[in-house]
Amino acid sequence: MANTTVSGAKAIHGQNPQYLVETVIRNRIYESNYWKEHCFALTAESLIDKALELKCIGGVYGNQRPTEFMCLLLKLLQIQPEKEILIEYLRAEEFKYLRALAAIYIRMTFRTVEVYELLEPLLKDYRKLRLRNMAGYALTFMDEYVDSLLIEERVCDIIMPRLIKRQVLEENNDIGPRKSRLLNALEGKSDNGRSDKSRSRSRSMDRSQSRSRSRSSGRGRPASRSPSIASRYLSRSRSRSRSRSRSGSPASFRSRSRSISPDRTETDLPA
Image (cartoon, rainbow, N blue to C red):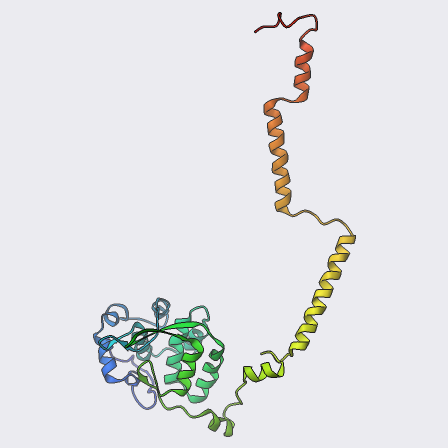
């Protein structure tokens, strides 16, 4: 029962979602200790904690042992969370391995148009990822990983479902043309559609306004001291008053000198 797909799950590409992972790798996952100890009775919420502990991505390594990344991917295929939950996984920018896990699941289960719309924005993510394979550890990047999901037939030792080419979708008006950041940079435009010249003008205007404000504030009332500086001055005055009280005030010295009569000589004073 622990290895069966949740009841009421929808068929993906006409088959059981777990069958998207090859039989050999799937059986290895069922026999692994990580699957038995950490993946039992996981839900869409509790799986997040396990995904945050991931240190690498990949399929199998060593003697065909599955990675923890692959075990959690099979668990997602088994429990089949809702689409909104997967999109929230993908939007978690601070957790890159959770995003990578959601990206490969979306690539395997979502429709082609949704795959392009959700994964293409991740091509702007240039963070490093650790990849574990049969040769050991390697270094890759998020944009390279997402690009391989869109164009490669096998990623993380798993055969990806067939994906319709983007050109065909554009000809059928199913999806809009792809926005190239390189083309925008050559044209002098930013991601928001504003040109670099307009941004530089706005920055210069902001600087001139800030300078005029600072001059006007300098001509008016003097700027008040910051609380930190004021506290320093207060502490100094308090320390001085304490030192004076300990050593004795000038008035006390005068009273002492007046109490000694001028007729008494130094010999009359007590030793």
